[in-house]
Length: 107
Image (cartoon, rainbow, N blue to C red; front, top):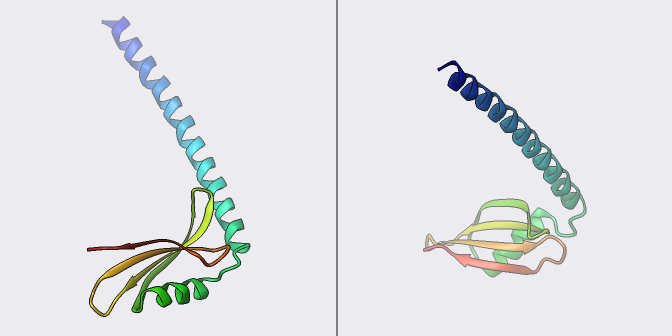
């Protein structure tokens, strides 16, 4: 009985250490991702105002949200637009060129 308890305690302690290492690695990865995104945002050639104008030129309506993201190592603006008819559109605008890379319509 004591041997089984020692093994369980040893496994629990080892698992705790592994979980702590994994959590620390995840924190470092998120910190690195934030630095890359901040750097890309600082270097963006297309501002958030320009991204909104580009999206509204494609889909007239009201901008619901605008977010800066790194997608497939490309800096983009994700713009959600609501039309007068109540249809929501999501456009991904390159922060480097202003090109609309994707356009999805939500049903």
